[in-house]
Length: 179
Image (cartoon, rainbow, N blue to C red; front, side, top):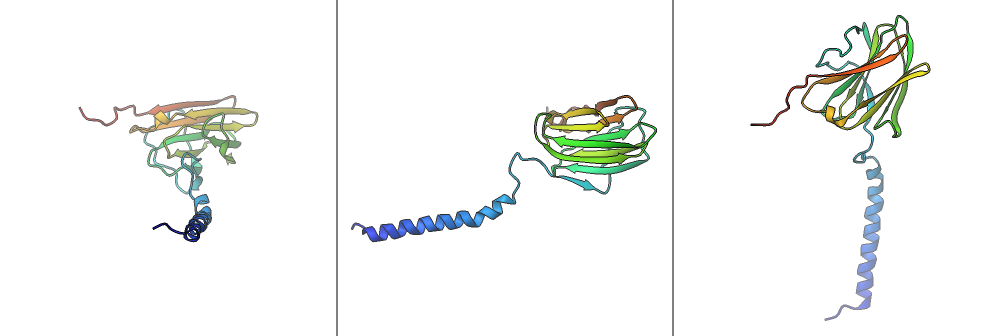
């Protein structure tokens, strides 16, 4: 038995209207879900993270952590600590992006007193470019995805009177695996 043209047209119309309705109902929901591979969120937290390694630059100390930035929500960590190693307060700019040639996700200025620091806790395993600037000087610190493994690691950025220097330290232990 062959279906008539009216029933086929009705079925097509029902599928078209139903599909359009489904697409319209999901359009608002999808915009609130972060896209895979998009930039991680950057938020301020009240407490600095626990540091698993000593400072890579031995003459650094801080009386206070001005701010703690948490980047992403993953369980992997690499920390970047920005230190004011001068004898006076400095206005410091911090920019965070995925790579030095990509669009920035975050840009902010902080007043760092002498012997104060700023903690950046990177929590997603990916590449980062963090630019620290003071006046007309800046330093770009690149964090590679390979630094997110079982080892504790941190990068220290020291703002000095005549330069901005950075060094990275890691526990460099063998990671996981059986024999």
